Image (cartoon, rainbow, N blue to C red; front, side):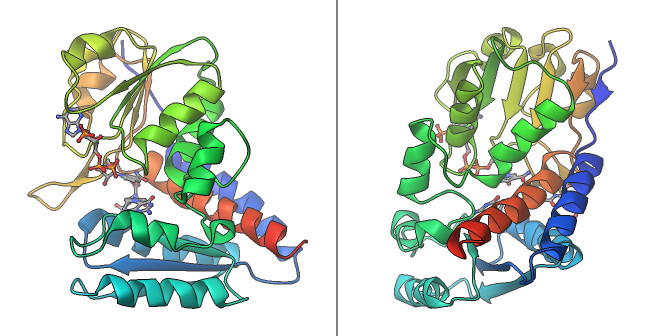
Length: 281
Ligand SMILES: NC(=O)C1=CN([C@@H]2O[C@H](COP(=O)(O)OP(=O)(O)OC[C@H]3O[C@@H](n4cnc5c(N)ncnc54)[C@H](OP(=O)(O)O)[C@@H]3O)[C@@H](O)[C@H]2O)C=CC1
Ligand SMILES: Nc1nc(=O)c2c([nH]1)NC[C@@H]1CN(c3ccc(C(=O)N[C@@H](CCC(=O)O)C(=O)O)cc3)C=[N+]21
């Protein structure tokens, strides 16, 4: 079997076109601020592409880059300033943070109403409870991709590889909310290959290039590759051995051109949503 390629780039472009039309009718520009501390390579890619997309859709968007050596107190000061700024509707704090900064303390400092990546315990708790709130952009983007690709989720067996607060956990919650039977796998899971082979939908969010091999994928399964790894040749690759897996899967996302552009489109969607709620528009 040769898999159908799910074109995240095209699906994200359609989403952005819809957002641009809504923003043009608003009479104000939704304000987004991204805070990056240090030079994590995946975060650098994200910021570059996000800046372009945000301008195109008509947002007031800026990135604040702080040096790797920034103290937690300095970062908390920057976050407090953004919380208090009425022009700012959405704040995205890029992860991972340098070791001297406690991620939980930094996330707790965000105004939950401006937390467009859905990381604050209030938003994470709403999601865990199956209630509406701001939803993490990457898992939300994956759900959009599954819907656009016509992949049935209700009743399907889905496996999520990775259990991070940013991707794996909220991904599992969204799949469960959509009535999938969800398996959560991680670095301690026994026999990942066998677990994957049982799944109709495989979501790889680990950060290990080529971890998911072709024979881990059941014939006709859907494979969504969240991983963004920078190879020694400088090229971006996912967590899935793409050529092998495409020989087994029914549908598969590429890297680049899969989940990445959807994350950005969903960040803009969440920022618009936060702006409408906050401004009572
Ligand atoms: N495309 C996009 O838009 C985005 C891409 N990313 C990318 O997705 C990847 C994952 O990101 P993130 O969730 O933040 O990463 P984290 O490092 O926070 O989490 C990785 C998870 O993978 C698990 N893991 C690590 N090694 C293995 C293994 N050998 N087998 C099974 N599980 C393993 C870890 O398990 P344990 O909990 O046991 O340690 C952990 O739960 C990265 O490549 C990142 O760059 C991230 C965000 C958005
Ligand atoms: N709080 C937080 N939320 C995140 O969502 C988050 C984060 N921190 N830290 C870093 C990771 C990484 N990430 C990416 C998003 C888009 C692309 C992206 O646009 N990828 C293009 C790359 C195109 C290219 O430049 O070649 C693609 O896959 O097609 C990449 C990486 C979000 N992350």
